[in-house]
Length: 405
Image (cartoon, rainbow, N blue to C red):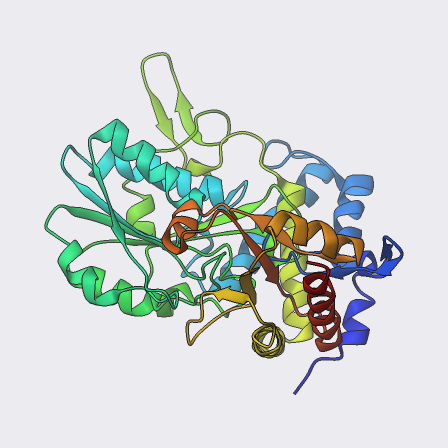
């Protein structure tokens, strides 16, 4: 079953415009997705009529905003099937969520000589925080490689894990290769050795159904702007057993229980990790985006996006000299590639002249570039409001540009 794409696209007015005289084709969804009118209206409603700080006053507006903020937490809990709302922490995005765990978990559980395992395909946001933590704590960062198809070399994982391994952190879906990693299998392997696992879900949450209890992951992070919500808001899911054990990442208002100059005690979950005034409008907007997905059939969108990436891959493979990076059997809506003899930057500019928005460059994944021995790539990434017709226009545009060179 295919969703009514023409009807869906009417919910995203930004798509109904021309760029350089051509209808906009937005294939940069892995960087940020567009927002439906419902989300924009919800954000505007709060900004215009209800705005007030949360958890701090008893007046009407404060109560209304607090209720909406906590209702948003419950919406997220249901979206990822967390065991309780207290396991849902609002952050500024995936990057902050990972930094939070890298700092707080590291301070508690990582000592000199202890090890952290990441993968070769990680976004910089799931590499650098662990490097910083290892430098600070004397830890060792170990890397699980992937093969040229973009599939993790799981046969190596057992040899990487030792009695010194304290945590494993990896992407649910690669932002560059589109690979859907076998995270449940990896989590099971880790838990056999009592090792927790953090999942970078920045690209997983927009394209897959997330059930943190079924996955049994210890931490899961994602961003609002990748799931058709606002920027500046994200989620860190954590099992209570871990969140209770680790210290706060930031200090300030709300995260405290009692402050004296002798000692400060901390608030209960989840507020222990939500210092200062949170982006409550962002949280409410993100919940509205989740409602939109649920109302329109999220699984239907997921299936349709799989059809889009399959169609795009088959089309692009017809172009002589075009190399696709990452052809794992299980992929989400990302195709990264280069065309021989054409710099990715030039290709991106020329596509833009034809109204087609793609990402070019190193894609915040230097180790992936190094693996394939390239300086940069072109990335086309899809969402449920894209169409097969847009892919055909994209294909013809690449043929036209290639002929120019």
